[in-house]
Length: 494
Image 1 (cartoon, rainbow, N blue to C red):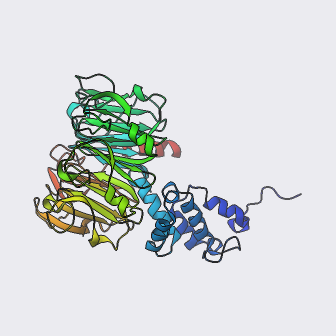
Image 2: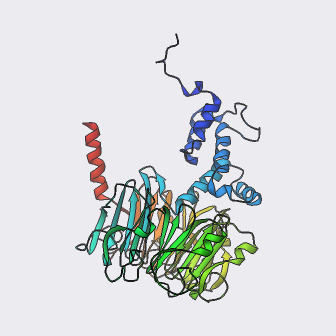
């Protein structure tokens, strides 16, 4: 009888089983690269696939790319362009796809899953199963109750559910949280119905479930100035709140006290990502089309004029050039987009070089950012007259107005302008996985799970009690998490 207790080495496993493990979807591109470098079994070909794949890992990366939701919607010419941009390396293609997917969601770090998002004067952080907030708690936006007006350090938010938070959005005056269950909770100033609870006149100081979305699971939220957009698992968009400029997309300027589906988007396909500016909304479809609606001021809608759009309207310049957009970011006065080949486009007001084109000229329609064409971008982030672009190697480009140091260039003055994209030397030592910028502060998460912030800290939005501002990135510690981790370690050790 065979010895059932004998340990089996990985080299003894059948090749098809190894391939199944590699393509399970639980491994990142970095994991695959490490396996390929450390074990000869993964560098072999095993006769399982065509000769144009150099190794088992290479073939696994190809299969993971082929089944990825972003890659699957790309036309064949766009797939080839991305493959060529990645120098024929399927692991790099996979790294790009995974980084783009995580740019508007939680990112995988060595310290667990994290998401950072900045509001006007506050910051929210998802760290594994918990959510933390710091900064100004005006109108209850931090979710800690009516007695808390400011948190000088990241403090954990309590939710009336055991479901984990998977996504969070912070805005000027309210916040929204998507749970693993698909439920959405909101808190903050509800004077304009933006929290979606069908009532008005008082702030909501602790996260409350949006009952109007019961039975409609969501995967993303985007909070604007006094309005909210909700993206469902089925790719539909609901909106509520103030609608003065048509930012809710319903064809009128009537406010909505509870979420209502945007019917036009429902009729044209599935939405992959949403972003909200102060009074406008951008929606990226699975087919790469970008729709915009709301206030046309500052040319943020990308249609070449400053007319309000009460209904979603496709940005034609992308369609004419066959540009497949995968992510967008909606700033206060300008917008930025990322396409399926890692190229970047900006439009809107050019104040202080926020468009990165080397001048302060407005762009009425999207214009490609040629100065960084040689880099593969994976995340774009726009806010108040400043912009960031994250490349797939973890480096960060910044441009626009320094704004109290929130652009991150420690050798520049607090009100200087950076007219073209420049790499933030202050972050070179850290591989950045995600970045978010508020009015005058910016926060990043590194691949190792460390958090750094820079810019204004007058309201403790950087999670430090003793600093008024930071001209260079300063690490932010999450004290409650440190205590929890230490307690868990002691319990395991015991």
